Length: 185
Image 1 (cartoon, helix red, strand yellow):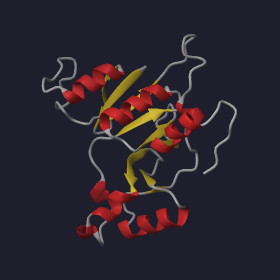
Image 2 (spheres, rainbow, N blue to C red; image 1 turned 180 degrees about the horizontal axis):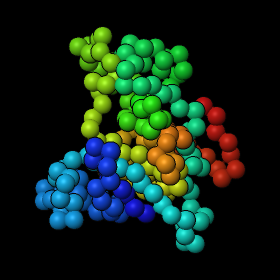
Image 3 (cartoon, rainbow, N blue to C red; image 1 turned 90 degrees about the vertical axis):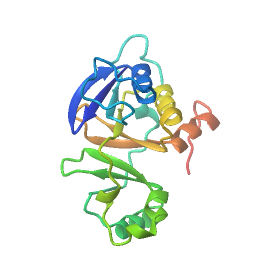
Image 4 (cartoon, rainbow, N blue to C red; image 1 turned 135 degrees about the horizontal axis):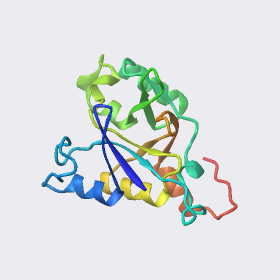
């Protein structure tokens, strides 16, 4: 599995998940990543190429939700709260005009700061963002949730277009279900 690091929309380097976690938690900048500031949460894309060893392992495409609530950076925070309330979702994926994800925003982020009233979602966007490919292994996604305290990750295809979302609830559903049991929430 590789983790492609993006900064300002450009690929900076390819590394495996362990190298990415080490980069994030270390204070020393690796030599092979000269343009990434240490301890930055670089924009990332996890990709697993199919191999004979990984063919039968559970992937993001098996557990992701394809029903995704999206908005643009120009959406007002009040509109975003209304959208999430009406759809009964807790995460909103901010996308650009090409349907490429820019951020995943949790409902609590929207209602947390009263000073943001009248603002747009763009004020919540950070320069750095991570997404996973639909072929990423679920165990690696769980590692990202634990290490970076994510509550959800956007799932993208090979062209970096949004195809779904995977949340902690999706992973928890795996723990309580049997192999042939369908969970409805």
